[in-house]
Amino acid sequence: MSAQQISEIASLLNFEKNKLELLKYAYPFCRDKMNYFIVENALNFKSSKDELREFILKADY
Image (tube, rainbow, N blue to C red; front, side, top):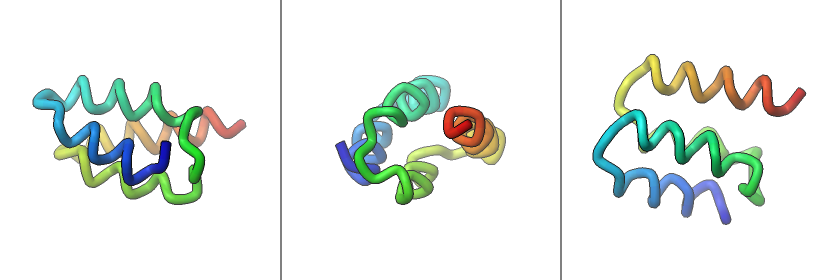
């Protein structure tokens, strides 16, 4: 899946926690990880965005 598709799916969810869980789960399956920053648009809170960035940094190492 592309980052855009993952973002659109996450946007359909109501709860921030569920969006964040989906975005973390989907990261390894994303075919264009260099564009994964766009999935942050599905999140509403800065703390969630920060947590996702930290997760990605750890996943890439």
